Figure 1 (spheres, helix red, strand yellow):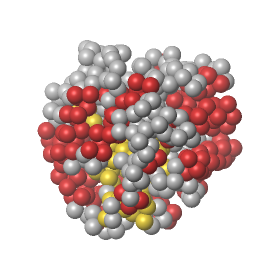
Figure 2 (cartoon, protein in one colour; figure 1 turned 90 degrees about the vertical axis):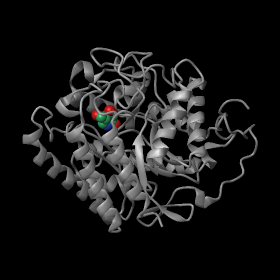
Figure 3 (cartoon, protein in one colour; figure 1 turned 120 degrees about the horizontal axis):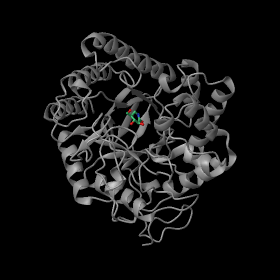
Length: 434
Ligand SMILES: O=C1NC[C@H](CO)[C@@H](O)[C@@H]1O
């Protein structure tokens, strides 16, 4: 069949036998349900999963199958994956890109996503697909503005001015032409027919949810009321649009929680109360947010873990108030001594993972609306290629996207203690599924 027909057109592929509704992940009050049982996410971030599935040069299908088998054996039941990237001049962005200009898609990379989704189905795993990125490492919203505002796509890794970057990138939400193109890309992906198995994405229960973007923020920490209103409207309208295209799947925002909402709880609650947002997401980054100092791990540990626990609990409590499930879909910490070297130990990271897993397990077992976790991020067999640990086109993909050192947060297949922790806690979450 023609690869990935556009939405609306009758699929040339064999008609999809409508999967039983219950095969889809659905929301039952403040919990997920799947195949007649409650469903908890013991997941990994695997942004490059579609890239590995590509039949073209950038693909590595044998590696992908091995990675999926390794994750499956650990009891990982879900992966969170970048669905589409945009070609950009920004240095620390992935190359090649799915979109090489408005409406110009690389069918080989889209076929990679097809392959990934098909292989996940064979392993009874689900996937969360994010359709854009607030950050530069996949082109994202900034690249849309370069296309439609004509503004230069500035890489904050170069300027080091993240405040300026965030304020500018947030102009994406109100840019009519950018939104029109973004919705075209949404139709392209959501309306896709899998070129491997002929299934329409919208009818495939392997997909758990569509996510508006990776870490969409209203602007920077000083976002104005106007920016917050635009952001809130964008979330509701885009989520509604996706539901119009696809009656089967859940929609989430990809928000980090308060850290991604200018620390404004009212904004986080308001922007996620929309009936078109089915569940809440949040992310936890003690090192990025300055709570943990890798150079002073002992001195900064207590403050970091206390703030982390408070962050975890506060968002579960907000989910309770809003009455929706919430997933901690990103969290991570670097290797001992802030090393990027795969040979460095991971004692502190393991301790951090254990604390997060324990708190989530305890509150989930207590019936609270926390529906699981995705650690950031699966490195598996990926290996850094350069002495400076920066990614260059053609290098292995791993958990750290190109805008970060290759090894910063990745969990590699050789990190035995980390994998043992993940396996143990994936099993604990699974035991809650009734
Ligand atoms: O979505 C993200 N959140 C944090 C990750 C690690 O810093 C980062 O790589 C990614 O952009």
